[in-house]
Amino acid sequence: MQVSASQIIFLAGAVALVWAYLQFRIIAQIPIESFSSDSEETPLTGTGNNEEKTARLKEIYEAIYEGAESFLKAEYQVCAAFITVFSVVILVLVAWGTGWDMARGGFTALSFLLGSLTSMGSGYLGMKVAVYSNVRTTVSAQKPGWTACFNTAFRAGAVMGFALCGAGLLMLYVSMLVFRIHYPKPKEWIFLTECITGYGLGGSVIAMFGRVGGGIYTKAADVGADLVGKVVHGIPEDDPRNPATIADNVGDNVGDVAGMGSDLFGSFAESTCAALVIGSSIGAGGDWDAMVFPVVVSAVGVFVCLIC
Image 1 (cartoon, rainbow, N blue to C red):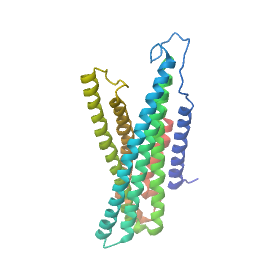
Image 2 (cartoon, rainbow, N blue to C red):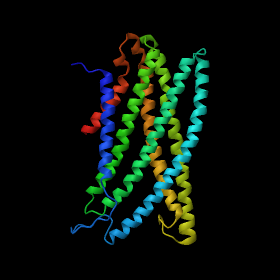
Image 3 (spheres, one colour):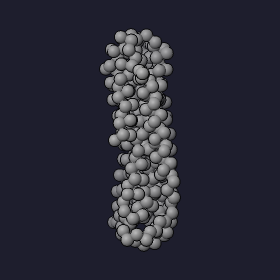
Image 4 (cartoon, one colour):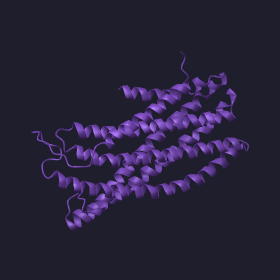
């Protein structure tokens, strides 16, 4: 039985999203409560009053969660304004460069918007999962050994990785199928791949905002925490009594997790779109499955990661 490229891509996208959801459900089942054990093996968090630690942990977790949510909300408002204006610029410039072909300009601007929105969703999902799982990883560290906390952290990474790949694959390929309605002839598919390059550009733009904005924020908070805490008041480093320490942790989640999520999506979208443009000449022969081979490679990678 012959399997088409569309079947492989849609199946891989669905499997990635389902697997990410299952990993998230496993993490969600971990309660944020103290854990005690009669085992002789010492927990990673050391000995002491676990109930007291967990109560303090909840307080810090809620502060970081609220801060990260507020930061991303403010940042994405700026991003939304930027991509709205820049999509108009792309529409005008692409249309002007192609002899005022408004269809190509519109499709390129649309793919840019879709890439930007998908990248924003990837970053937001990464931040939510990271903050959600950080506290549960710490709670799991109260158990003897390191297996429980390692698995919690590993599953949290799998949620963002598989969800990002699944959403990126489906959004990219569905966009190509929609554009194909306007460009049904194989000789026109080169225009389709040129229009879809806006998808990678959108992902990279949001990644830049996430990386640079989050990085500057967390570095400013880190320096402020050191100056005010250690130098002025003699508070130990990373002490939660210092508000700048909470801000530093917010910046770590936003820059290193949300920014990384957008960055990974941008890299995936850019490389795939570039390979599609290079291979668009194959479309002259009318073989759609051959032309979308770069997307199929990414789809097969989902199954390989599940096996490995």
